[in-house]
Length: 108
Image (cartoon, rainbow, N blue to C red):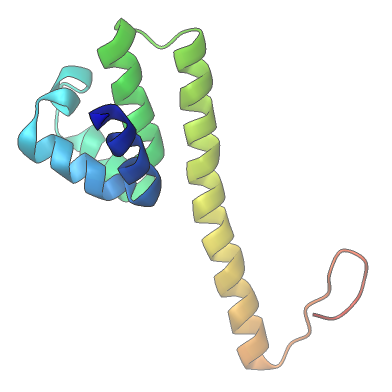
């Protein structure tokens, strides 16, 4: 049951889960030796940080199914970051009065 709650919280707010793990357990300390990498992961790639920590705490290596989970987490993090930049770019174009064309050539 606690594992399901942790997974639900991770999908809602991975940064919240990282903060709680850092404050109330040694889960991240087991996976990472220093403070810099988890801090950068908290800021830029939270899903990847959690997936890597899970992989290291589970099997002490990133291979097999754990590797698949880490790769999916990287893709999710890159999609979240890239989607936000694309949205901002579109909003700026709209504010400047520029037209945005869809892939089929129609104006949004």
